[in-house]
Length: 80
Picture 1 (cartoon, rainbow, N blue to C red):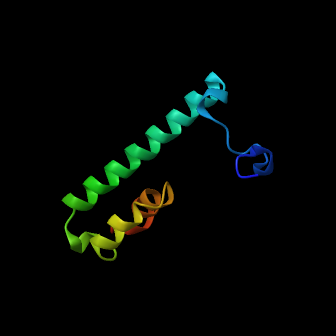
Picture 2 (cartoon, rainbow, N blue to C red):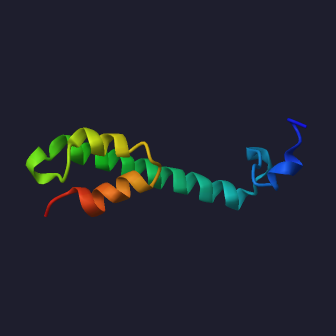
């Protein structure tokens, strides 16, 4: 059945089914990811292209990839 969640292996829980601790951890992780993404986008905008490995547009597009995009930019995208 399309609406039967038992096939999903209980991986998809509704917000109301989460414990307070799970909600707090999820919100904290989302806030951290959003903060990294915003910081990376600001850095890309302010930093001269000569100080970035690869095109700025590529790094902006990489921000779509959840946590991997911003972490990759800070680890590999900026020249030191």
